[in-house]
Image: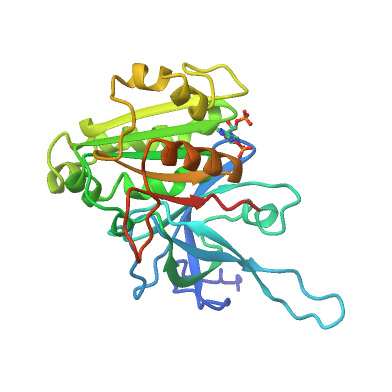
Length: 282
Ligand code: A2P
């Protein structure tokens, strides 16, 4: 008698083994420093485009007790509030406590997601204006990946300017692909209006590798070069609203520049002309 091959049902629902477990559905690597991934969305999770949640993995077992603790970090949700799945954009730090492990996740793996979204990069924290600027460095693009796919962005503003400064050209790919995808997104073109993406002015720059536009956005604005390239009027508090998300030094420098231009910082409890949030690094 021949041995029977065991039948494995690949469609069987996996029992979550982690607290607040979500299942990874897709992973894409961009450079040796950057990757993005998608996971299932808890049915109860409601969030506003631009907010962040705590996500992570179980840490290594304690050498004596064998107990494991969750290792969590704040991550902006890169997908818009209406999406069925959640998307995240992450740095890979080879000796980072979380991202040294997270960079190896595969579809089918589980991550921990605490379903308590918070954050200041939300439309509710801004008063009405004509033009919105999204200023990002590195993985600080993530909340804007959400807001660029959020219909309210185009309902609230006539013009959407997104600047992204990275060290190398390959680090611009994620943002570039998101913006390109808007042009052929049938659902968004139907819901927001055909050609809504024409409101976007995209200004990617690099600082350490040759690309079409080199330099820090802060310098390019101060010199007036960015305004000339984009064909727009300089920042002014009557028309302009802004959101900043990047490394700490960048956030502080841009904050000063916006204040000098006459814009005031807003918050959920007191909406004003700009908001800022740190891109969280491992
Ligand atoms: P630079 O290469 O000149 O430091 P990081 O990967 O270190 O977070 O940096 C992401 C991008 O942000 C880099 O292109 C970096 O430029 C730029 N950057 C860092 N600090 C500032 C700042 N204070 N103002 C503008 N851009 C900055």
